[in-house]
Image (cartoon, rainbow, N blue to C red; front, side, top):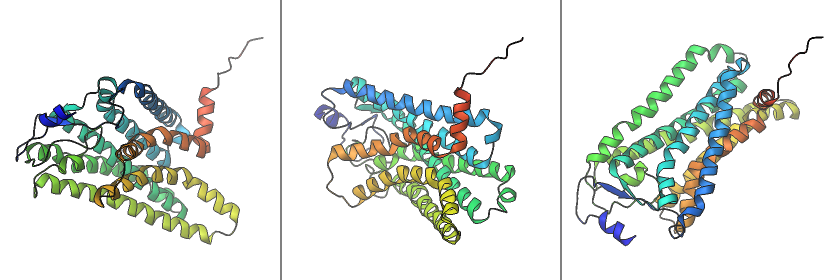
Length: 323
């Protein structure tokens, strides 16, 4: 490790070094291969679960409604995040490869954050969709038309790409005043911007991206659930409240699963809380790898329509016999 630090740690202000140094899970560098199996298993299960949800929604005309279209986008973002993380994670697990070229690091950073912002945007859109369906049920079909959904989808795409396209270029050409050693097992733009010289535009823009997406979206989601809670309090019977609340249960679990580890990591880093490095790394893995694994299970269990269509597709078809 000290050799890598020497190679990746210039002592003075420099432009982008040819390599970055990744930090894996402490203690696993001695026997890196044993955690390859659970890592690959988590990835394959994530792809299988989300792929099943995508297939069911695409194949079932009865599920071609706004809520399921947003669930489709959520599945795409989950598969995208998990896939973007795998190259460096598998490199560490299989070959203990801590050094990564700057170009590969920037490429991974771009895709990880594009799909992460996509997931955050979709979770926000799903919260607004549920709030609109519960708060204005009679106007819901006329407000959320196919044309509106297309515009929302384009807005999500432009938001993801617009926020992150400048970052690789800014980070590639900004001066670095700190050793180019990252604190995660993958390349993230806040981690890279932290190494920049004071006042570098890449670091300033990186902070703007974090606040404009990961800071704003949770606030709007909680505001949407405030409206939902207000409506639920006004419902007459407990049965009606239960039915209305069940429509939001899976989404609320997905929101907590996505944002709670991220907020904890941000607080630990900003407040410089003394936190064990293995626990910090594990919390980062939970933030990125657990939602793609758990979200398909949540929506399959909590959403009756998805569950029934999966069982229907899995059942063998009966072939009629002629007498």
